[in-house]
Image 1 (cartoon, rainbow, N blue to C red):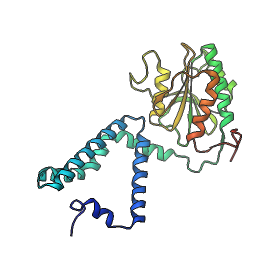
Image 2: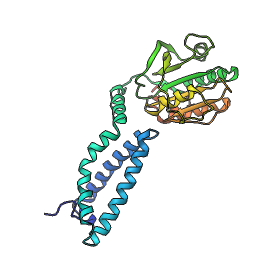
Image 3: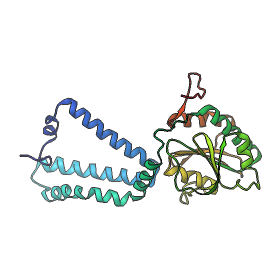
Image 4: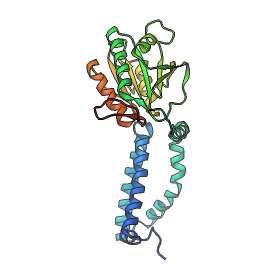
Amino acid sequence: MATISDASITDIFRADGPLEVVLEFGVIWLGVYGMFRFLRGTRGAGVVKGFFLVAVALALVIRVFGDATDGFSRLRFLFDRAFNLLAILLVVVFQPELRAAMGRLGRAQFFAARRVQVSGLAEEIADAAEFLSRNRFGGLVVIERQIGVGDLEGGTELDAKVSATALQSIFWPNSPLHDLAVVIRNGRIWGAGVQLPLAEEGTVPSSLGARHRAAVGVTLDNDCIAVVVSEENGGIRIAESGRLSDPIPPKEFRDALLRRLSAQTPGFVFDRRGEGAPA
């Protein structure tokens, strides 16, 4: 009986019905898409792309030329056996990403009853960001999505309503909590003065400080958005998936934040007029 390694592409497709083939490819596509989506913006994304390109190139060379001739027998043997070690290789290479994935799964709020009104949340944060920008006060606000941010250090738990006044008070110079981050969870200020992980040096332009590195660092491996205001020039930026936006004019910031919150944040809902409303 022929094995899969000996079978041709035509034989593989002929083995099952069209519906089964479509379902199998659908499952494979979802798995690959989910993996790339999870790794997007992380250090592991480049490794995955590089490994994928090398594997495809080797497979094409060995399968096409090897099946057409009697050559490449030793390469085909090594290529087939090498994939038996793929699982171990992936665990070793992506150990930090896998650990982060398990942490995300454990913190996921699958059945969260709270529905956050996006429009009101964006309005309050935008008002606070404009105030901070105008007065050259630094600020860093992290907005969690479906999965909570892990490995948070320090800080003071507040459990307070999100308002521009509250955020302005927290980031007022010489305030005990002004120098670190505010974390918003389930539409409320969960805590302030929170220490965030910093992105590696060189990730952000050298003209930007620790706040911007922290904004990139926390979004690199967490399901969240970070709003950062520079105390040097008052620039407002948004960090998402390990990427830092260009400075956003205060008049355009509310809409920019609103788009990001409504696009990928489960539990955030809109009515037909674009205003946030409970589900």
